[in-house]
Image 1: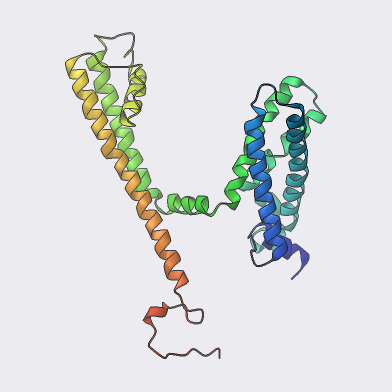
Image 2 (image 1 turned 180 degrees about the vertical axis):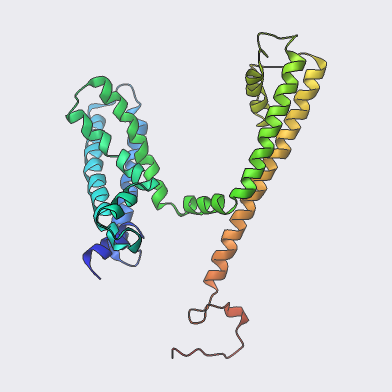
Length: 274
């Protein structure tokens, strides 16, 4: 295996059989967690001088490591036949969502060296949040959740459509019922949509409350409807998780030679490699 392919397998496919690859990936995960802790501690008004030094050290080390990681990913991506072209392949690879996140996690931090404006520097600090998002690349649970959303997208869109219809209907009804009693609160249908959204989600901030008897009844119906509607996406996502676990379970029981379930093999059956 060439060096480029080996680097690609380590960075993009997370080769856990390679000790060096495992060490690199675990090291990147630790560095990302250190950045998460640093982001939390940076919010302190006056950090201790030693803590300030440690946070700056983590910041600079992360910038160097993440820059090297990004450059290596761009360099080795041509090992994948999908991105084999040295120019257009790398451009398409760089435009992938996770690569854009990687880019935003490092590039803005080089700008203060060219534009030393303190206000601009404060804005750049917001891009530290993209270092937190990098953990998605190394989290199997997030990848599984992404597959579930993709596989169940049609059902979830249907559930979202039902929610939007309920939001529109109850907002319009509540506006016409409560507008005369509270014209400054339920002043328009868009304003009533805020009330409807927090009622359907059972949040209820208390800033908009119906005062008429009919308005209170509609509010109760809206709250119950919200509970019923939210049961739809929850059931869809739970079903998706069960499907993923069943797939994983079947894959673990598959015969390495024929791919069929081992439990379906006849007793004493022996496979040949020829």
